[in-house]
Length: 357
Image (tube, rainbow, N blue to C red; front, side):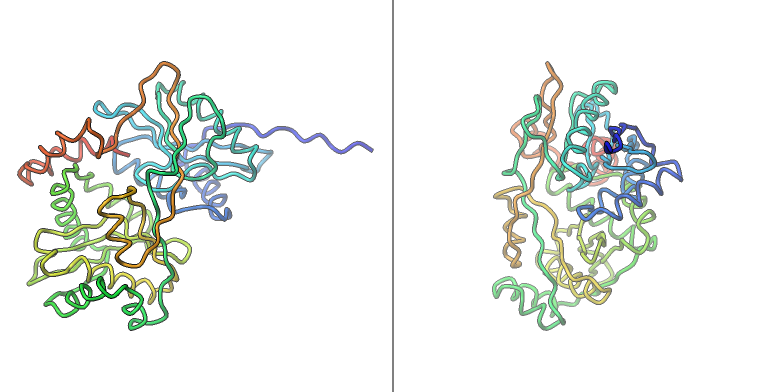
């Protein structure tokens, strides 16, 4: 007797803003071992609302079942071009599939959708990457991730930190600093004030305030803000995500005063302790560019660099997108941005940053 014929999966465009579709995507992501917080439809719909971009999910269906999904943010920026990003404003994402064949089929569908939407670029951050597909460029040498297990108690966590960095943490612990954790409006206001100053000092436009609010609201107990204050003024603050037993300090920074007070050192150490108390077993320090100051900072904490795989596709005849803030093309803009008065940077920055997904 012949085996029953198995029909090929059908490509579909899914709208995560629809309640039933959201639940369907969320269930598939929750059941996939390689899912990150940036695959969750909660993330995708939150960053779409917070940045004014469009969220969509490409999927493959076999009967009533999803066999692959690709969360995408469709970004139209006058400065940085039109692009489909997986996952928008995330450091992870990419395709989640039940097999390599499913991933390859979804890549082809993504190319078709990009052309239909007049987006000459696709960016994938992680997941199954293209293999010898025309128009795709794959890199494993641009960014690294930094993840380590948390220690079993507070003292062990301090001793885990390498000696030189541990000395900085001890100075932060001895300073006159107050630590708070929450997601109320006061926490959000303090975080945005610190973060906006921090990224301006780095020459980067600040994201819209609504972006952070939407992510906090969408993630609920899976996100919070830890703030370090000195004499009533917030000097360091970080918005963190929690996913499958790991904490990820995601949007964080400090004011000029933070360095002298070792407030950033105190902040990350306190986050380690807070995460363990709420049941986390791992600390995901996120990604940093290879050979960057941020990457060296994470190594000083005892984290080992693990290369990340990224891929980009450029449509035939189109120019490759350049949204890399470290590129020569943007160097003069960054130098100018650092000199802007903070109120001006905060006014103009969100309009620019919505295209930096």
